Length: 148
Ligand SMILES: [Zn+2]
View 1 (spheres, helix red, strand yellow):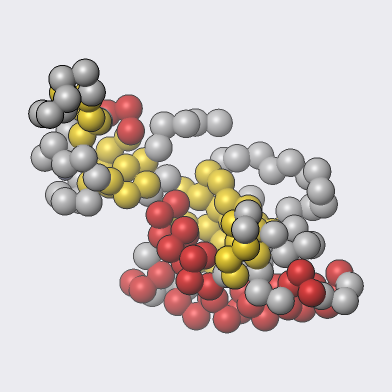
View 2 (cartoon, helix red, strand yellow; view 1 turned 90 degrees about the vertical axis):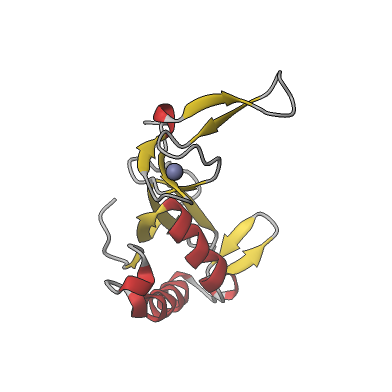
């Protein structure tokens, strides 16, 4: 699994790998250094590494890089969305329910059984898929049939 993230500069929109960012000495603290955009020197970037989101029957949502192998421990993971890491995070913050440990699919933890849980998940993914393919979605696709 690669740990070299895909970065996009928040200022000049340049796309580069995290390993390509330049190290510069901090102006105030000589012992510190920053990794900056190789084109414009901006410190801030979006993490646009391809990512995927999945959930368990409990409704608990997990998120990781697209090539990550999912551990079948604690039940089979159900993939439901893919997209650039930062945009997928934004969408989950908006569409999913906040829990102490992260996100859950709204209503899914209260499902009567697995069949009920899948109905709740399907309805939620359908509702979230309204923006699929549009500029609004910024590359995020909600789909229960997404490839792992
Ligand atoms: Zn830049």
